Amino acid sequence: MYKRIGHIAIRARDIEAAIAFYRDILGMKEAFRMFYGEGGTLSAIYLCMAPGQFIEIFPGGTEERPIENNTIGYSHLCIEVENAAKALEELCAKGLPVDRKLQTGLSKCTMFWSHDPDGNRIEFMELTPESLQAQAVKRLAKEKNV
Image: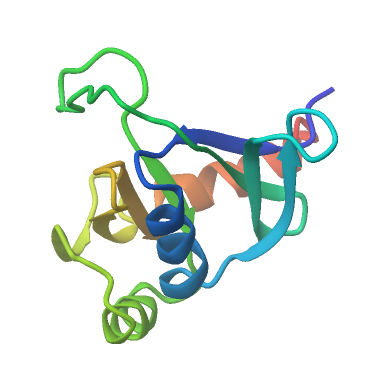
């Protein structure tokens, strides 16, 4: 039934700053822009993270909603990387702000944390062979549920 998560949508206060972050620092490619009517105002911009996976950015954000550990609803975006240490080094060289340095998570994955220009939290995660996620992927593949 399900194939994958297709996109995550965010509303940005400064659309150009958001695009610059996701495109120039994280290396995502602009896929397309949508407009209201022919020649109308910008509705949203899609940036491609991986084949079939997008970040959708809407302009015009005006109200802040602090995201804390106990906030109900959206918490963070997680981007899986092949090598967390290498990703951290390369992204820091491009100006990525680092909120939490490289660490081992409760699930035994390797991760570090950042945020975009609007404060949306981003986790970068490497699935180590001993991570609970990697073990679940193997187990579920054997059960043919995924």
